[in-house]
Amino acid sequence: MTHEFAPVNFQTPDWALEIPSRHWYIIAGTAAIAGTFGDLLESKLKRMAGVKDSGTLMPGHGGFLDRFDSLLLATPAVWVYVRIFMH
Image (cartoon, rainbow, N blue to C red):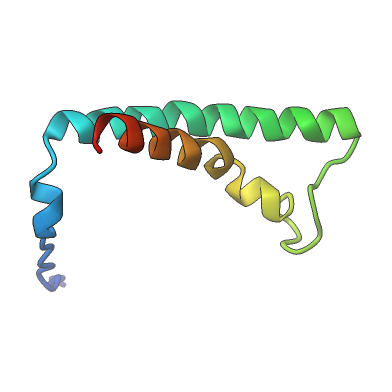
């Protein structure tokens, strides 16, 4: 049995090609490191509060905040980088 996959045509937006690749690497590294710290911060806050889940909106996933905790620090960190070094 052979499987055929439809070709996927990814087109990079023109604005993305104008940004030097070093900025993309720095943004990726910044998001990874800040995201990890965001996750650790949220876990620490839950431990200090003595709760297992940060909400009941998404049962079984640790709550809504547990799904997006890495974005709490990663988004502002990337935004600061873009505003300072790319603007």
